[in-house]
Amino acid sequence: MRNNQRFASLLDGRNAAPLTEKEQKRAANTFIGLDRNVNARYEEGARTRFVTAEDENGEEYGEIIFSSDIYPGANLVNPNASLSLDGAAAHELAHHYRWLNKSELPHGHLTHIDEAMTSLEAALRFSGALSANDIQGLISDALHRLRKYVEEMPANLGAGL
Image (cartoon, rainbow, N blue to C red; front, top):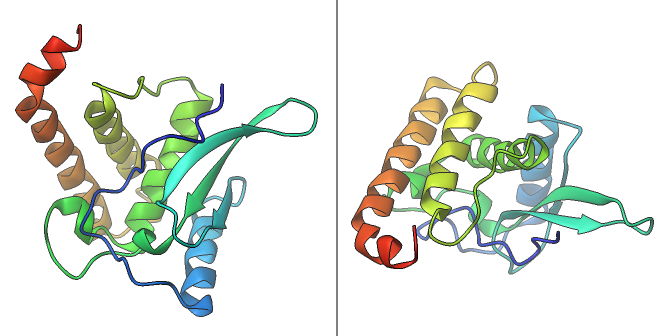
């Protein structure tokens, strides 16, 4: 199953300015520093997200596509907007592991819950590599996503839950 059309993981309010080559390298090195076994590549003008694809042998693999929104924004629209580079990278890497262990939820009406679970997994999985502020930011993001789900609940219930 290809999920190359997967929605962006990171919410609006994050950085939108194009990245310099130095910022691109810093982000790529952050992914490598957290987990060198997961491929992460820069794609200008894209939204940061975890995707799956197939190689030339038909084998499915996962990778992270990152762009300018991997860096935090200048405002505090929501907890996700202020997640550091490390926190955002950990979140995307957690998507990879949730895909590997088949614990990701279907996108659509469960997207906010899936994203909340991903932020919580990132906080736990990478707790030894993240600062206390990053862990708190990921937990705040999870709570925010759960609130968004509850706010949209009448619409979700109409979707056949």
